[in-house]
Amino acid sequence: MNFQYLHPADQIVMIMERIYNSGMTTTSGGNLSVMDNEGVMWITPSGVDKGSLKREDIMRVYPDGRIEGRHKPSVEYPFHSSIYKKRPDLRAVLHAHPPALVALTLVRQNPEPYLLPNTSIDCGQVEMAPYALPGSAKLGDNISAVFEKGMNVAMMENHGVVLGAQSLFEAFTMFEALDYSARLQIKALQLGPYRTLTPEQMAVYKQKNVPHLKEYRADEPTSGELELRRELCELIKRAYRNGLFSSSQGTFSTRVDGDNFIITPYGKDRMYLEPQDLVRIENGMVELDKKPSRATKFHMEIYKQHPDVNSIIMAYPPNIMAFAVTDEEFDARLIPESYIALKTVRKFPFGASISDPAKLAAEMTLKNPVAIEENDMLIVVGTSPLNAFDRLEVAEYSAKSVISTKRMRDIVKISPDEIKEIEVAFNL
Ligand SMILES: [Zn+2]
Image (tube, rainbow, N blue to C red; front, side):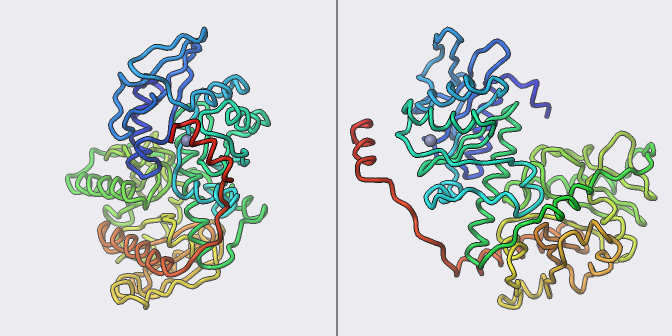
C-alpha cells in the first residue's frame, strides 16, 4: 500500500473507514481533510453516514472559496480552514471523537505522553483548546491558536481531538497512538498511580534500532515456509482488527527450521501486511533489502536458547499494559483459563530486552510463557503462532476483566449557558 499515490478523496474514504471500524468515531462525528498541492482542500461532507462514505461524497473547497461536490462541506470546515491558514506546512487535518480522548477532555486532562516509549515518540506535544460551540468561528480560533504555537495536536474541551500532519496517513498513526495513550491512561488510573518514563529511560529506548545484520539472498521459500507466512499474516491482521496490534506496533515471529525464523518488518502497516513483507532471518543474517523488527536480536536469542519455543509475540494491548505502567501485579490465578494459558506472569524492569537480551530471553520458557517489561510491552512465547496468539488474547481479556472491577474520577460539565447556545444554534 503506497499511500501517497492514492487520490485525496480515496485517502479520506480509506482513513475514515479505518477510524469508524475501530470504534474511534460515530456515524455523524468526525471529519477529515487533505490540502492538495494546488491549494484545493478535500474534505468530508456534512450529514453523510461515516460508515459508508464514497469517494464521490468528498467535497472540494478551492482557494477562491468556491465549493464543489454533491453535499455541503463538514460543519467543522471553519477550523480545518483556519488551521491551514496558520500552518501552511500541514497537508492533512483529522478530527474525531474517540471515547477515551473525549473522556480525558471531560476531566480536563491531556493524554500522558510518557507511559510507553513508542507513543511518546508518535504523538509529540499536546495542548487543550478551550470549549466553544461546534462549527463556530470561535472554536476555529481556539484550535488554530494551539497550532500556531507549533503543536500538531489540540485536545478540545468536552468535544474531541484534532490533529494536523504532513499526510493523512501520518495524522492517522498519530491519532491511533494518542487514542491508545488515552485508553491506557484510563485503564492505568483504575489500577492506581502510574509510572512515567524518565529522560534516561527514553534515551535507552532510542538505542533500539533496526539491527545491522549481514544480508543474504534467500532461496525460493518452501511450501512449509509459505504456509507459515500466510498463517502469520492472517493472525497479524486479526490482532490489528481486535485492537491487540496497532498499524505500526506489534511484533510476531515464528520458527521456520533450526534457529531460522520469519518476523514482522519494521515500519509497515499491520493492516495490509502480506506474506512477502515478512522478513526471514537465517543463520543470523537478514533477507536482502528488508528491514526486520527492531526486536530481532531478542527473538534470535529466545529461539537459540529454547528449541521448544516456536513462536514469539511482543504487543502493547491497553488492558495488560495498564499492569505494565503501574505497580499492580497481574494475577492470572484469578481465572482458571488464564492461569492454565499464562501460568505466572512476571514483570521485568524497563529496558531489560534492550540492555541484555540474552538474559531476558533465558526467562522466556514454555513453563512461564508470558512476561511484562515495565512501561514497554507484553512478551509471549508459544509452541505455534496460534498458541502464542491465544495467550496474547487471554492475557488482554483477563486484564480487561480485572480492570472492569475498578472506577474513575469526576467529570467536568459544560455550563447551562453553553447548553442553551447549542440549543439555539442547532434548533433543539
Ligand atoms: Zn466534532
